[in-house]
Amino acid sequence: REFRALHPPTLLMQGSISTLVRSIRLNTSSSASARRTLSTLRQRELRSQRTSGWCLNNGRELRAQIQTSGRLPRALHARKMVSATMTEAESTQRGAFVLFEGIDRCGKSSQTKMLVENLKAKGVNAELWCYPDRTTEIGKMINAYLCNQSELSDQAIHLLFAANRWEKSALMEKKLKEGTTLVVDRYSFSGVAFTSAKEKQGIDLDWCKAPERGLIAPDCVMYLKISVEDAAKRGGFGEERYEKLDFQKKVTSKFEDLRDDSWHIVDATQSMEAVQEQVQVKAMEIIEKCQSGAPLTRFQ
Image (cartoon, rainbow, N blue to C red; front, side):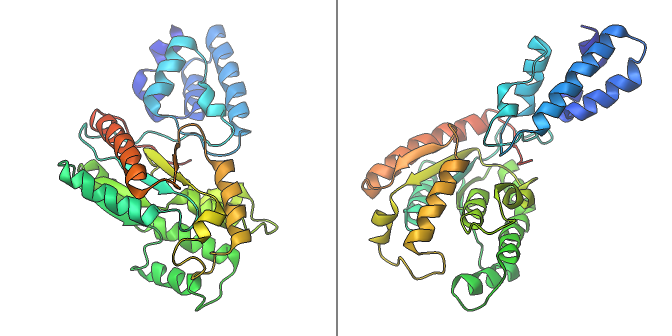
C-alpha cells in the first residue's frame, strides 16, 4: 500500500524497474518496508536482465500485475523476447501493424497484396509496405547486394537492413497513429533470421537483435510456413543471393527459434484463397483490438 501511494500508475506505465528503484530510493529511505520493496525489485530487475530474446508486454498489463500481486509478469522472463515499452497515449482508432514473415517464395508478396485489397473493400484504411524498401538510397545499396551487383561484409549488410527499417520508423508511427493499418512484407524477424543463419563468429542472435531495439513492434505476425523443397518449386526461386536450399533451411531453423505462441502460423502449402481466408480473419481481429485502444509497443 505504501509503495502504491508513493508511485502512482503513471510512473508504473512510463518507467522501468530501474526507474522505480531510483524513485523509491529518493523518497522512502527511512522506511523499512520500502527498503524491503527496493531489495525485491532490484533482485527482479537483475533476473530480468539475464533473459534472452525478445518479449512483448504492454505497460498497462505490467502496471496491473505489479499493483495487484507485487510480482513481475512471466512474459518479462520469456525465453524468446525482451520486454517492449508502451509509447505515449495512443488514439483509440489507431491502425494495426500486421506483419508477414517466412522464407523466400512462401507467398508473402501475394498474400500481403490480396489482404490490402480485401481490407480496403471492407472499408479499412490499409497500405502495403515491403522491406527492404528498395526505393531509398539505403534500399538501393541493399538491392545491389541482393542482386549480386556488389559485395559487403555480413555485418555491414545487416546494419543496412536495420537502417532501412529505421529510416521509415517515424513515418510508420505517424501512419499508425492516424488510423492507417500497415500490412508489412518482412521486418526485423527476417533481418535477424537471415543474418544469424550465416553462422559467422561474432554474429549471433543477440548481436543481430541489437539494432532492432526501439523499432515499433508488430501487433500480429503471420508466419507462412512451408518446406524449403516446396518453396523451391515456385517460380523465381534462386534469382537472388539468399535463395539457396541449404541456406533457406538454416533460415527456417532461425525463424523457429524466434517465433513464440503469439505468432499466427499458416500452412502456406494451401491454395492462395484458403491462406487468404485465414489471414483475413486474424487481421480483422487485430484491427478491432487496435481500434479499441491497444497501445503501440517497441522492441527493447
